[in-house]
Image 1 (cartoon, helix red, strand yellow):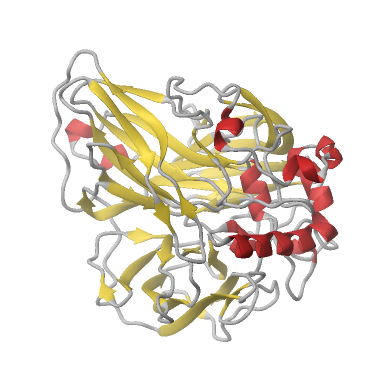
Image 2: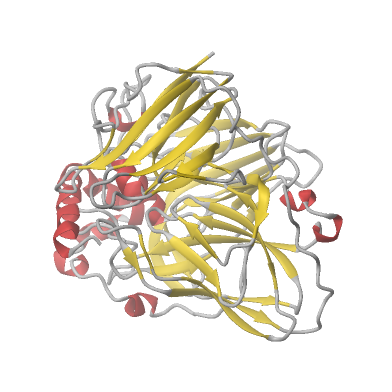
Length: 533
């Protein structure tokens, strides 16, 4: 079936980051701003952007409390499992909860359409670049080939050009929640035959933060994990929560990294659910729903809490869990996803879904308590359904006892001035992995990821998920795989550590890994491992 969708750091450290990005902006971002938010942005004076408006001022013109609304969905009609879709990356003036805002989109909306695909299907995505800078796509979390016209983040689509991705979804692909977004490793493409970023050697700053922040991201769902639940739960209502944040200047533009300003996660921010400001979700007493939670923003963390409730986690990062858990809070760093069951109270009332106060370290950012949505319980009660327990069907196998082919260490660090980010002392290079020795298909490796900095770094691996074995030396019980895990910051000079085991089951090629705070990725905290037969 075919679809066509058009177009804290302290104050000193924050200033250092702005200076770093301003230097980058002088050479590249003047054109980037027009790509993301429109050519009229080039007329902005420093006074327009030097002092970001307060959150309350940014929210002026928005309607809070509108009914909860799922993102638009693109899926087959059931007659053909394969799906074809066209995405046009375009400078856009869109509606954000009733306020007109300038940014970038794939379909004319701040929240891109949710793409729903079936295991065993072929997904064809035609990307047309209407921006004035290079772009591309990454299908985050999908277990598909990283080579050719598949999920290859080294592909580059120049301004005015297009390309077609063909994703062969394995028949046994996990059912769950994923997402897609720009993975632009630079603002220009090289001559034909070269890679992304405009350079085949050395380091060039990426453009992921600008493009995701402007709006280029959306959810992707494989199958329907409700089919893995006990029969009584297989027909509960499912909702997708795409969590995105924006900072809007006085002219109504989503902020970008420019010569006069930069995206700063500590600045006043508006947090949205499916592009709406504090929407209201109706549930009947005792009703159970499946919520697919996606942090589809560029940089910031969410520490989710539904007041008076708990979450029943059945999936994490698109993989069914090996043990259902019932936490009161969920930490979603950038790129994190959870599939959870939520059961309404027996009595009518209201509960707030919020992100509570959170800091990702003394060199990082601090976030205030912020209401995101309201659950309004009312109407005729329904029968209360039992919660699942134990392992979900098709949960991946425990790697605790498997032979380890290689052990590797990755040190995550940043320069003292905050300008650059490193893995094993090196910034990202298109032509060189930090590892001299490749991984081999059919093996399992153990990686120790050490964080030498004072802020948490969410580590993400492309192509396959991994098992977390320990955090700061504390063994972790096997209950799930992940493709994104926060690595704790150093304390009193002692690095934070996470040990993971990575199954290289198939798919030779370059498996990319990086910090998923997009600003860190853009400024060097990224590399890849060569995987060979």
